[in-house]
Length: 174
Image 1 (tube, rainbow, N blue to C red):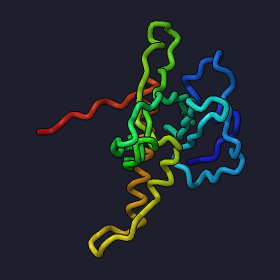
Image 2: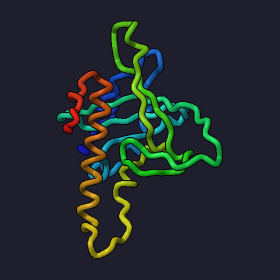
Image 3: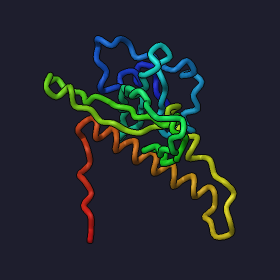
Image 4: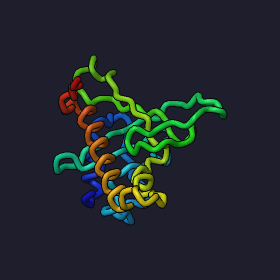
């Protein structure tokens, strides 16, 4: 991901309501290693249910304010898969996040998009984790490259859906 300025990262959030206040950037923003990120994701330290996700979409920074839904899972629940990195994790490490679609029309403000995401928003670490494989497995570098491409594509698709710039639905071939 290309490096963003603080102003650019704040301005990228398309669905923030001015009444909600200022977008708080992560405390380590100035120390980020941009070349290692596929998107920038962080939690609001003052509002634990708020999270932000910013990615490079078609050459410009686009982001979203996400709200984590309360988890009602039981301790014995099964693993859940993150929709972005596609890693299965324990029930308390993945949660449903919802993002309101931006709109000037008050009737459309209630429209939102939900996504199961890693609660720590560190999918970029998951996609770089490669276990040693067997002799017929692809090389680790190839696996990481394919995972990163998939992560970026799913992140951009989510942001397109949120901003009504959704790509056309894929048709099934029979």
